[in-house]
Image (cartoon, rainbow, N blue to C red; front, top):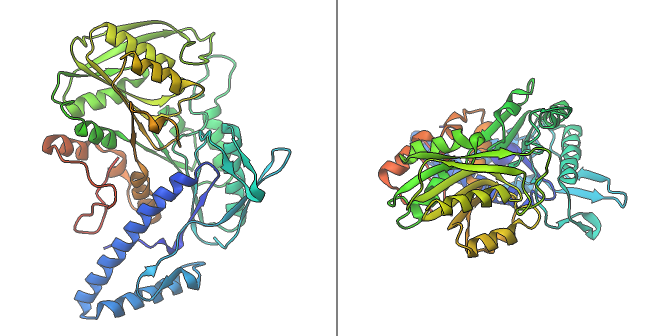
Length: 431
C-alpha cells in the first residue's frame, strides 16, 4: 500500500484563501492518520512486531528521509502531529505593494499555494492592517507567494485556485486580449508546475500552456448528492434546463446522470453593453426550447456574477409553468448587490433553492434560507494527496461512475466529519 506522508508537503495560504486552506488541511490530516494507522497494522501483522514499535520506526524513518521536517513535528506515538501549513508574513505597504515572507524552511518540499481571488471580505496583513482586496490584489498575492516559494527552494509548486482568474476572457471577439491564457503563462514563467481549479469557464484555457498542467475539478457529485437530500425532488416530474448554449455539455451530463429530459434557454446578448447588476444585463432576448409545465427545473452553471441573466431565465421558466426552480453554481460570486436581487426573486417565488460551493468565501449568502452551501474541500484534499504521491487523478476528474452508483443505489450522503476509505487505504473518489 502507498503511505501518504504530510511531512514533505508545505501549504501557503494567501490572504483570502486561508479559510479554504484550513478546511483542506483538516481532510489531509485525517487522510494521513488513517494511512499511517493502516501501515502500522499491516507491517505489525506481516513481521509480527508490536504496533507501538512499528510506529516508532516509521517516525524515525520520516525524520531521516523528510526534507526540512522539524523535531517538533511529530512524536513516537502519533507520528506527524503538526500542520503542513507554513507561516507566511504578508505585508501591504501604504502604496498598495504586497510582500510575502516565508518564515520557515520549505527547501525541497512540495508546495501548495491557496488563494480565493473572489474573496471580497476584509483580509489581514502584518502590522494589524485589514483591507478588502480586488481580484487584481489577490492575484498579486499569488505572484509574490510563488516568487517567495521559488526563492526559498521549493521542489514543486502547485496553485490551488478554485476560481481561475480572468477565466471569462478566454476568446477574442475583436481587439481584445486573451487574458485567461496570459495569466496562466505568467504562472508558468514563475515556475508553477500544477494548477488545481474548479469548473474552469473554458477548456481552451487548459491547452494554452507548454509544461504546466491544469487539473479541472467538478462539483457534480456533491451537487447531485445534495439533490438526493431534498425530499421528493428527484421523484417529481423533473427536467434539466441548460441556462444557455455554453452550458449545454454540463447540463447534458446532469440530465444523463439523473436520467431526465434536457431543455434549453436560448439567449441573445448585446455585447455593446456590460451587465452592471441583476437589473441591468446585456440579454436582449431569451427563449425556452422545451417544456417545463408543472415540472421541477434544475439548472447548472459554472459561475454566478451579478446574477441578472439567471434571474431573467428563472422568471421565464416560471412564466412557462415551472413548479420549482433549483440552480447549482460551482463558483457563486454574487457580485455587487446580487444577494439583495436574489432575495427579491425568492420572495417573488421565482426559485426554490440555489446550490453553491464553498470555493468562493461567503459570509452573507450562506445565511439565506434559499441558499445551500456545498463543501468541496475534501475533493481538493483527495487531489492534493494523489498529486503528492504521483498517482493518477483521472478517477477524480471523471466522476460519472460514482455518480451512477449514487443514483442507482440512492446512497445517503456521507458524514462530513470522516473520510470514506476502501480496503487498500485509498479514499473513495468524489468529484
